[in-house]
Image (cartoon, rainbow, N blue to C red; front, side, top):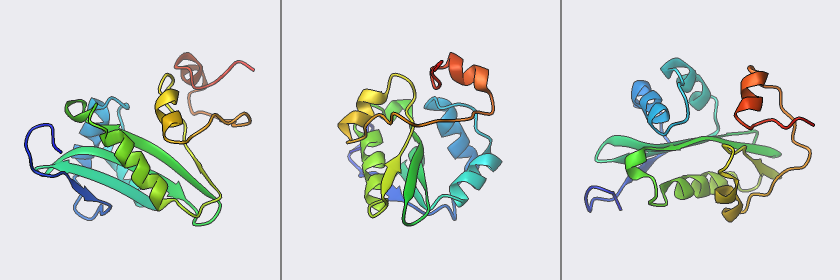
Length: 149
């Protein structure tokens, strides 16, 4: 149910008519950072699975999964507008992306530091061997995405 009325939320995987500026605004508000509309168009176009949620036509939630069809699906960029947070919408987006990813040998994601318990409730477990190279390594350390060891 919507936070503002009784009309059901609208769910879609289509990006054909997506307003990329609205998607960028959603990520800024969530807040998941400043992602340019062009970068979002590239990442969502190249993602096998997408989940977009609208409330009376307004984009209120989104997520995507990069997947290869067999081995690995990587869920990323799950965002919900602050006005719609706390209603289980993020959980539903992740659940739909997990369902779409069924059949892959592994489904991975990396959480914003501090949000690990949320994903644990959805069945995800900490990987002990995950490694990463970030474009901005110092910022990744500062924000808690990388460990010293």
